[in-house]
Image (tube, rainbow, N blue to C red; front, side, top):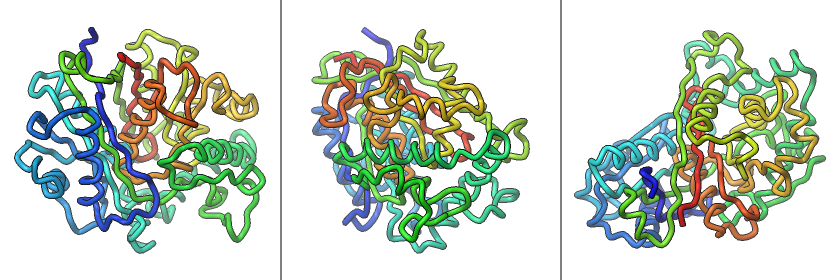
Length: 390
């Protein structure tokens, strides 16, 4: 029996423009459902870990207390709020893993959520910029502007790759059609993604709207249990390995902004701990907040040499039918990116694949899945290698 905690139940809202008025309601919708899925009573939960970014999106803070507000049966369970920019969901999940591994508790409930679509554009833009080093990077004008700067640097060094970025967007939209939880289930095609138009304008040159993840509402929750409890659960997906690595928040302090050294470090440590090679992974759910981020992750993880990420796209290996499907869920690009929920959602998408319950998203025979979630410009980096126990 593995010594690692396992996910034994989960719940996931449909991402998009949610009818729920706030984060409290979104959390309430998934926490009870995750407990039911796991067959766990509220009274058996030893700790609650809540991932909400907020960043000024809501005047209601103290998100650790919101689970008990929406689900009074959980009000007396110790709860904590975790925030780590776009990696907030994974930060909450890893905190729960440490809690269970330490023996402080045997069952933890992890929930991530964000309510974004009701925010005014200026407020939303300002909130997302808090995920950058504002003292130096606020001049980019937006978080998209920060990543557009990376794209321009990449193009200056390796040539114009707008076409490559459009292929990544089109691939993820094609995958997202099969995801019932996705914000945008529409196969818009390469030509639409590649062409600047009224419906696909430039957001921050050279990034078009289709190069940017969606502004979404949503929530996701998982139940994490100690090995002796997971052994009796109807399902169990565990961590064969997991690693967190960090990089400089100010981009000016990095030797190469295109290297994504923190992402590479998290990947390398997790893969070494798991004792596997890249070729052993059956799928990868990765953090495509912008298409250029997915491109740089190909290179950080060794799918291609620096500047050669286009070869990965051209080969077709990252499509659902390829040798390493990347974002068979549609990724943040199609599924959506309610910031606090994203890391939890990615782990659920992988768990569905490993338990053979992914429906039309299913990658046949999936046994090992990689999950990468990052905060900021690869500042906070989490890489999980997941496998099914049962």
